[in-house]
Image (cartoon, rainbow, N blue to C red; front, side, top):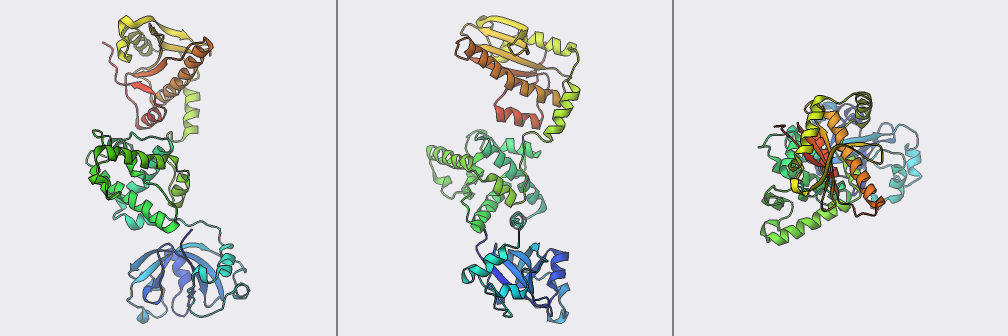
Length: 420
């Protein structure tokens, strides 16, 4: 909730505020007459209609006037710095007419600017007529210096929220760059700085104790945030290596445990980042594309090659007690390749050849999840401690979307296998 609610008198003989709000989506309000804070809710009482009509939010201050076109007398346009009041919602009913407002403490004065604490009964009544939640998306627009940065921040934040919700704390700057589809020299550090700025501003405006997301992103080499993380926490640069590890671990624990990330995204007008985009469309394509069909020679060759070259999945020849293709599971599924070793380990391999498309590889990833559960269940049914692992082996490589699935579910994937 914003820090203050205020009521302001929109004088029609000076400016056509209604038209400005409809056409611009905002109005400017002179600063030298008023003291607002960014994030304040300002309700506008229309002088000519004698009713309260608009709900606005203060999104910026020290702004030049940009609604001068709507002033009745162009010669009277002032040059004072202004607040920018962004339109939130318009009410057109009779409940906020002057007579009704007076029943709840409205005094009908000419220039009215009262914080909520001075008239809680009135503002409680007014609030009930407006249903839309405040869209704090303007914070991103205000704090990011360019359209490019605005776009990056709007993409980065949902990704970081997804990592937090999935408990992923080993992600790197390169991982983020790849998800964004950017090049090596992307200036990602600056964009992460803007992400931190946005969270801090949202915290200030709402009073919500939102943890940082920035500690989730780490260097490939140090497995810690870079020294640029000092922008988020001033003391970071002066910490010892062990103190940094402990500190970052604590910050990430708070991010993972925080249960209002959906609210944060919604408040900023952002859409959650999903592991699989258009999941129902993909489901239908898989259903239609892989309902039936025989085994290709490429698949058969890769399957037999892996069966005869266990080192590809990290097994020494001398450790094997059993290796076969088309191993039967109790679920009715058949494994492409199956190994057993002297220590009781069982290894399943799903293979996808060079002709497998992205959908088939997605299907293979989820097959690996299924096979892991079935192998573990078979072991327990046989009174054995599960010592099983599953691999997806590809002649090709994972797409960005399939890498997300791999990372979230921690699936063993071996890419770019060449049959010699």
